[in-house]
Length: 330
Image 1: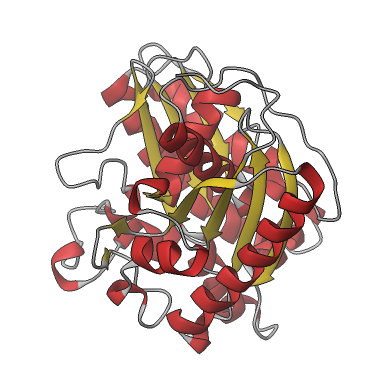
Image 2: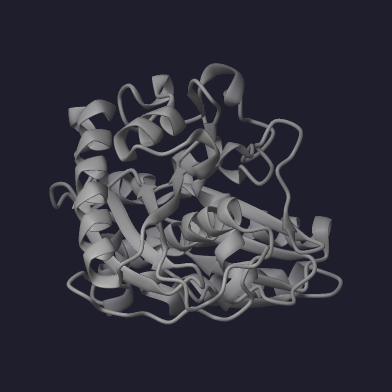
């Protein structure tokens, strides 16, 4: 049964990122109501990150209920890795994250029924948001590419996000870079991500440029400004390699559109330029390569969509708007 758009009830979403925790409430039509962003403090481990996110979620739940007169009817969470009932696979960046029974923690922390809580891999959640409300609407197949701290892709076929046999479809960070790669997922390595992901770019930039601890944003800014030829060469090399893998993905899937999001898209001209050149060269039928609509909060939006779907069998197709009510809605 479709819930009337005038319903005061609402959903809540949490995006557990490697560097940030985003929490938001939204209407049953997908419009953001309140939101808050926290630092993950990855070095502090999983427990403190989950507890602080849940504390923020309870505060937003109560404030939204006061605003709307409604009640929280479902919650969705997005997380790095493959989220299972009792643990999370392929999520090494926050100590203890792999041992989290994430759905149970959210159920207990928000006093919800198990049927009211859904979890999803962050990139797949982001892909859902772009397919439903963003740059991948009507794209079949469509690809969402996340270029942030890590690398990942989501694939939309027939309006559905492809999970894969083990929930790991699109984990391109594990792609081998070439025949010389002797390490891979079997021994805990993600070769492409360890070379071309945002964290790797920052680390390589710090070593090359001798300027202390740099982030990917720092390196990209130096390259974009044109005043640091070493940074520009490093960024060009990184994006050229990433572009080869994206072009191969385009050859394999023949997508109608590739939407690109994540933190590195703060330098969108550099990223999109490199990807478009290689895709145009390699793909027999080059797809559009565009910026994602939700460049920095697609996973949060996808968690909202999953929560809505947990509550109603008819998903919304109206593009959501942003409503600022005491939080930094993005």
